[in-house]
Image (tube, rainbow, N blue to C red):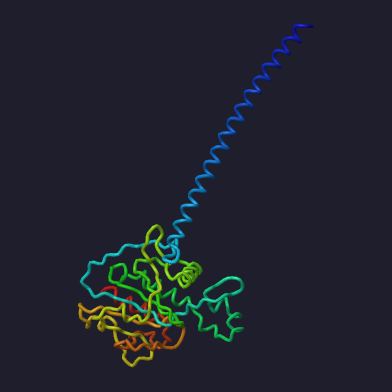
Length: 287
């Protein structure tokens, strides 16, 4: 009877020793994991400190915004350069509830009526469609677009670089416009280049001296075919197109050399931006 008991006792001791070894290994692994976690936390804290210092240095100069990739363009061309000026753009910032937003007729109709404003006048989607049409056009991809300027109803003027890729959704676009009007500039991620920036008025100081400034108006008595009209302009002269980015009404600018209406079967429609500008871009792509 004693032998079996002795054997069992020895086996229990061995198992206990084995369990102790396993526990020691587990504790060692846990300690190594804790050390790794502490090291990661310290690295994150160091990164936060360095990024905080960089933000303090750049604060007040530029505002970095992600999500605007840059598309290269070929500027080596002998054809005349094109510049677009969008007048009377509806981009007004207001505090709705607890946050600041770009006012639009769909989301803020009740807010606008309470403040005795006409919701039909608040159409930032027109500017959005306008910039998409211009920056995604064959004219821009061919490297002929020199600059785009936007002037709001409140008189704020800002520049949009030709190689900017406008976001594909309106909400994202409205967020960028809100930050632009609050921070005065938006830079490319990882670079110091300002893709969008608020500039001083008037817009004429940024236009080439030897340029022809053409305004679009459906009420103009001068009805032209775009390809023939542009072909008559000298190759040494840059063309500036001035278009109204509002829902209704017309632009009134003293720097425009000529007001035209594009000859097209839809000419009797009220000219919002996408009617006149898209016609213009279609006719210009092969010139």
